Length: 445
Image 1 (tube, helix red, strand yellow):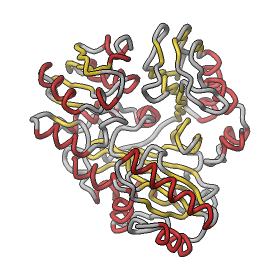
Image 2 (spheres, helix red, strand yellow; image 1 turned 90 degrees about the vertical axis):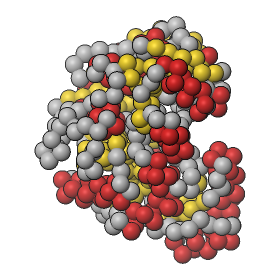
Image 3 (cartoon, one colour; image 1 turned 60 degrees about the vertical axis):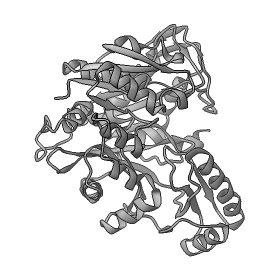
Image 4 (cartoon, one colour; image 1 turned 90 degrees about the horizontal axis):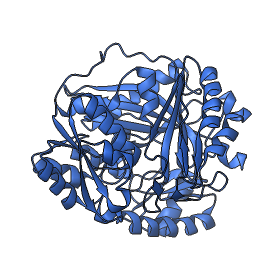
């Protein structure tokens, strides 16, 4: 097993990885920016290194500073968490070229899945269902208009190099397409350094369902069930649950088999997620993208399958067998995760500030993965995620009742936060029925 691990991230995910590392007797090393010096993950690590000012480009995306920290502390491996450099193939290559262990999929798999068009084509060749769309970038506006006419409106205009719900727009007709194409292309060039755009069929009433995969050290790829991720704002997730209330045993078998094929097609190792769009009426699903990293919502899978995904990541990276029997995977119970963000609960606009009060809920079936505590300052430099409230139980109904109690007990004063939104959601009949889709949040507003 790896003996020392540098976590190239911050906040709740750094704290989460550090917790498992220390449980396994692995020396945990944190890196932090000047803005994060007082956060819990810094003090909980066995060692912490300041790597730069608040600007992520000068700290958490600063490859040279991170590698220098690894060298000065004698780190053996690097875990990238999610976001920042986690899906940067060149960073993965550089880490391994430096003689360090990369706790994640290989750089070639990251590259193959990082380009949405290339990923679509690879998945189609592997027999994974893909939505109608372009097989090459729409080189210009005329090409986009032609493609959209062939696919049929409405269409999704998507940055080929995008991710995390960023760089997407919906066009219901040619006039809207002309506006969205220019907007998405400009955004993609600015944010990702790649203005390539693809056009896909857009499904107005659809569910977002994903499958957790794990590429084992022996070369096998296994699927650890599905997660429902349809509660979203601005194409970004707010709530995830497992198992999905929309997935029957027959559909689950097809989803998991397709996800395994997706992983096998790129020789996948370590943790990853195959994201799909599901038509709840027909039961058809389509490949959306593969996230080549640990997901924010991994805790719901951990509960349902009774494993620690970070430990499994470390075992794969160490060349060790998993803690579970790959031939006897069986889910049990239900879990829901709510992303507690520093944003107002109506318009979801960021609201940083000093945390005056921070009281986490406790009790049976309640887990909080937090990045902050009372007295910390939520700055505007990073993602607004404060904590993840995970509630578990034997059935979905039991989890919903526990979740209402946990949300009512979560006290945060200081920065704006979306806890009141979750109280509203948990009382919403559409959500409680399980028959919701990605339009549920706009309908609530």
